[in-house]
Amino acid sequence: MNESRIQQVLMIEKEAQEIANAAIREAEQLPVQAEHDAQKLIEKARAEAQDEARKLVAAAQSEDASTKIQAEAEEKVKLIQKSSSGNIDRAVSFVVDRVAGKE
Image (cartoon, rainbow, N blue to C red; front, side, top):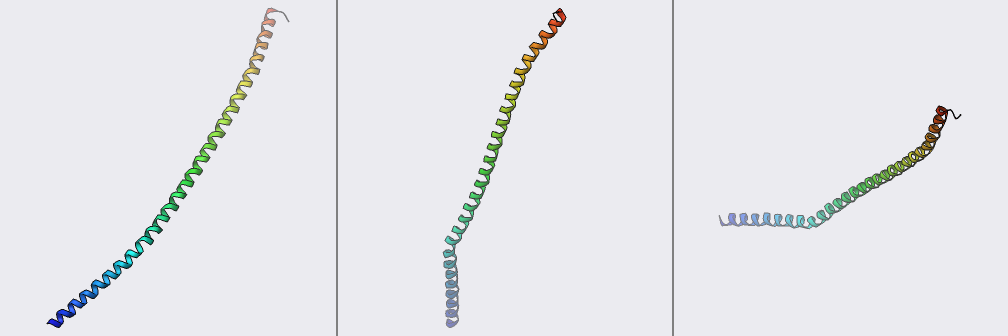
């Protein structure tokens, strides 16, 4: 029975050593895996930031274009109002002169 117990103890020690070796191998891989995961996160964050930057630039350019178009339209409206007010004054004078019999 003693020999049986010794064999059992040796077997348990062998299994314990295998488990310890496996744990050491796994522990050695953790920093490598962590670095790999961190690199993936950095790449993902960079891609998202670049996409967001593109969207912001596009929105800013669109806003600039809208502002420019609005300014041009307002300038055209002012020119039309200015030219039309002179025409209205002449038209009113013409009608008044006709009604008054001056022409």
